[in-house]
Amino acid sequence: MGTEAASWADQWSEGGVEHHGTRSQKYTNTNKKKNSSLEKVKAAARIGVQKIKIGASICVTWIKNQLKKKRTSK
Image (cartoon, rainbow, N blue to C red):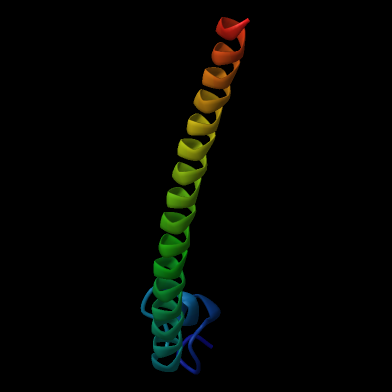
């Protein structure tokens, strides 16, 4: 039976049967594209979070300064 057709393990092992190998290569390339897209999204999100942190810090500083001005003017 092993000589008649490739076993399930042979088909899905690292090398696989020829047409399965190309299919795996196709999915590998697709996954690389998805990973690079994901990295771009992560980088954009990281930049966005940094901008929010900076904006919030500036806002809190401004509010503190406004409160100090009101307290010292009384």
